[in-house]
Length: 131
Image (cartoon, rainbow, N blue to C red; front, side, top):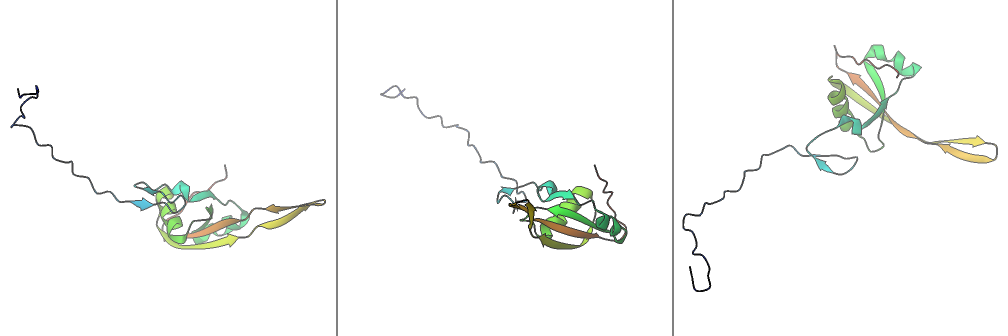
């Protein structure tokens, strides 16, 4: 022991090596702006549009979805491929504006939405049924 009761340093102290960090693919979620290592397709696609018109274009391997307002074509492509395990050929997006509605004197608004029409590659299809 030293003068002040300190212990002498141990010469055989173990050296602690820093852990090597694994490289993970970091994806920035454009809807929330948060960087994440996981991609959730349900953050982009709100629900499939089940209408008469969307049913008629299904034989052309085209399917319609309501998507978030911040979604772009690349995000929609990744989301559909992730959720349904298919290959996407083309994505078209339409921003449907809000419409005015009246009940008597009161004027309101029916909210707008963003719609994506996805064309799948040959040999793939999606089973979209109303729930």
